[in-house]
Image (tube, rainbow, N blue to C red; front, side):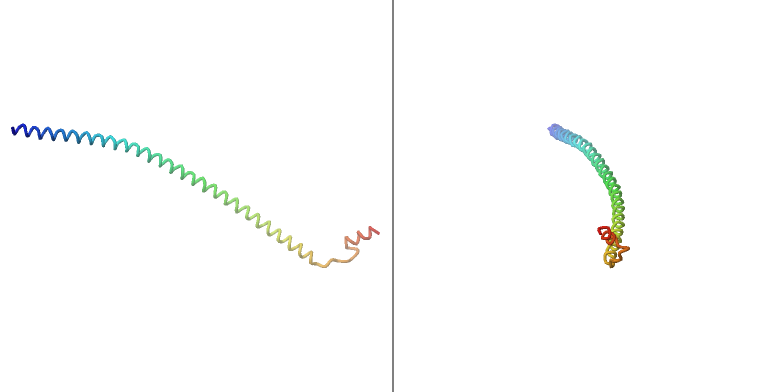
Length: 116
């Protein structure tokens, strides 16, 4: 009777161990598949990060070129503004000078002479 009881306990322990071994095997298989999918996701994320970094580098270089072109255009605009200001000052000075009524030097005088 004692040996039957010990055999029954051992058979139960063996059944429990077999059941736990099967459960662990399924968990390991699931972990391996999760690991491979995680590896694939990480590789995809790495590739995406590399593409984004490349895009940032391209945007930076394009931004630098745009900034240089803008600086050139701004310099040209300043030069043109200065030239325009000089021309306007010259025009204003000429406009405020008294007009000579000298018939020999005046273009209008030659017109009136030509009409007569």
